[in-house]
Amino acid sequence: MNINLTMIGQAIAFFIFVVFCMKYVWPPIMAALQERQKKIADGLAASDRASRDLELAQEKSAQELREAKQQAAGLIEQANKRAAQIVEASKDDARKEGQKLIEQARAEIEQERNQARDALRAEVAAIAVAGAEKILETSVDASKHNEMLDKLAAEL
Amino acid sequence: MAGSASEYIQHHLQNLTYGKLPAGYERADGTVLQEAQWTMAHNAAEASDMGFMALHVDSLGWSVALGVIFLFIFRLAAKRVTSGQPGGLQNFVEVMIEFVDNSVKETFHGRNKVIAPLALTIFCWVFLMNLMDLVPVDFLPQLFHLMGLEYMKVVPTTDVNVTLGMSLSVFALIIYYSVKVKGVGGFLGELTLHPFSSDNLFLKILLVPVNFLLEGVSLLAKPVSLALRLFGNLYAGELIFILIALLPFWAQWTLSVPWAIFHILIITLQAFIFMMLTIVYLSMAHEDTH
Figure 1 (cartoon, chains in turn cyan, green):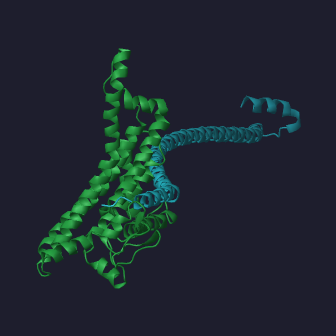
Figure 2 (cartoon, chains in turn green, brown):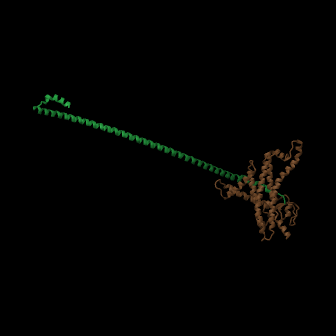
Figure 3 (tube, chains in turn yellow, green):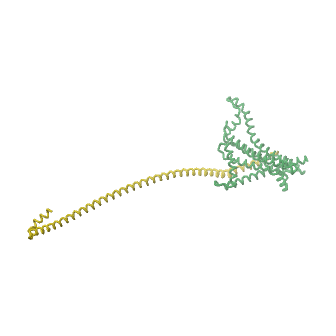
């Protein structure tokens, strides 16, 4: 067992290797390891966040669906009401129209009756005059007895 | 046979040594050096006579080559690193880095940019150096013998110089961080005022040498035990492989295969222990416990 300069040579080599390892080997690999750790942590956090977002979106969509349903129900109700109103209004209109028609008809009837009555009156007067002539065997001067005849016609 | 067996073992345990022989030294081939000379040792005696001024070329070469392989692979992964889907190489490198990072975080709670890469380097490098133990003991030495190199010890961690070089570096870091975190006074206080303490000033001063002896031994034991644990395990493992290699070739596998499988555990465990103890020692250096 000779103790000699080999010891010092080995110590020098050891020193150089350690320095090299410390400067050029350890830091880049350690940095990569830490970066990967960070990436994985970020990925996990992102997936957490995404699942939370999904939950929120699902909740939101359910909420919106509910609202839409409500809105639709409201619209239908409104439409029904409106339809009923329209039906009611058209019924009203029809009733009014009918009434008007009836009144018109009545007026017409009245008018025709009056015409008929006037015609009848004139005819009755003529008939009366004719009758009277026959009775009297004389002609009645229409112009002389017009006043009397008109009075008679008015009584009819 | 006994002689040749012990020669075989000795030969396998001899490092390829390049060092300085003193003037007037008689070499193995009988020549006498006129002046001090840097040269390759031709046998074990020459290598040991070189004393401290020698380099184990094989240990250093293999350890540096393995360290370069480790850093090359990891640097390749670091260059192509992506935070997206990782490829095969990046997966492997990430597993290693996360393993080391978790080990560091479990033990060391301060903020220090050096400890984790240091631990990674120790684990991978020591593991690769230990792994050379699984290469059949004669394979690489024979190959280098053909290339004209007499000795070749391919497992750097079976060389106590290598493990000591690393553990003393760790020891230097222990001292550096102790002083940096606690200050010179705090560190000296830790060494001299504990574990025995007293409210009486006179007693306190009297206890300083006792404490210093205890704490000094426990401090010095750290790098020595760190180095010798790794060295001892791998040296013993290598020795057993060499002993198995002395058997007839058709019988070797009955022992070498189970031992190699068991050794996979030792190799990994020793690399892990070296790394873990380094982390523990450095985290102790950071803690102001007293």
